[in-house]
Image (cartoon, rainbow, N blue to C red):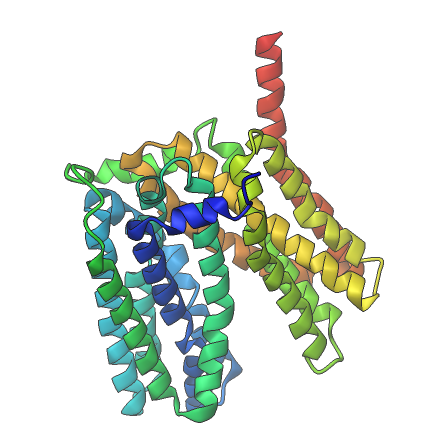
Amino acid sequence: MTSPAAPLRGVLGRRQFRLVATAHVLSATAQSVPVVALAVYVYQRTGSAGWAAAASAVRLAPRIMFSAFGGAAGDRHRRRSVLLVANLSAAAAAALLTGAIAAGAPPALVLAVAFTGAAVATAGYPAVVASLPRLAGRDGLVAGNTVVSTVESAAFIAGPGLGGLLLALFSPAPVAAVATLGFLAAAATVARAAPWEDGAGAEPLRGRRLREGLDACTSPAARPLVAVLLATELLYGATVVLLVLVGDGDGGGRAGLLNAALSAGALGAVAVTGRLARGDRPGGVLVGSTLASGLPLVALAVTSAPLVTYGLLLACGVASTVVEVQAKTQLQLGAGEEVMARMFGLLDALASLAMLAGSALAPFLAGRLGVHAALAVVGVEIPLVALLPLARRQLAVGRALA
């Protein structure tokens, strides 16, 4: 019997994929490392919680504003070149950020530099995802997407944690310097990879072609997949806030453990990659995992047993990552390579916006319904609404066959 880990071993055995994935690890972590240090610096200079919140928003806002344009760069130019330029530009911005913090620059200037660095880095993710069909191969696409999704989750979690640890030992400026080194290491790793494209990206980009990324996202085949992807991000944003409210009154300790369990589940999805890659019913997997991503929250609303709670959140994290991997894989298989970076750049922007909307929705629901009722509503309503376009498409196919 083939080992479930075989697809992962296969894709990691491809040198080109391994180098690009490693570069993505370094780049994604470098983007997250300065977050805590930036917030601490701004708060120390201003004493304002609002300024500290603005420092945190610098991490997400550029993805909402510029990822679509970063994706356009990935379709206009060779994606290896885009990754090199994006990482080198982000390294330059991180170096400027280091100097600005060391010099005691005004908070507004420091945040502007950080915002610029985050903006130029947005071209990296869509270029990586759009390159996966070539780097991982069709048979290795599920495994390749799992690696990239796991890297994203790990960096989102580990980056600020590493930055916080460094901040306990050093001042904010050296923490920003570590980000500079991370981006430089990412660029050096990409440079070691041989070019993986031939004529792709040679045609000049025209303004109207920015619309083609939106057309790819809203095509009849793509709409159900985009719906479940965005619903997963909305669900995640709401869940993180609701778990903080569930753990309220425990000094933040329980909330931290609850979110850690959710994140561990996301990382643990690697264990099921092999079975997913061999499956011949991706639609069924997508429907089941979308429902499974919300049902643990419903169960969490009626139980407080610690082991059960952490187990439910692990399951939620696994299911959410499976949704992301399956939906992205099907979008990659259905989209033309010439528009793929624009499509995923736009999706990255929409996903960030959905996560932000979920974070805003959670306290509103909790205030109106109570925390546990809000968990139940979020866990049921978001997955069901997300699956409506898929259900309509299946019904249409059934009528056509009849």
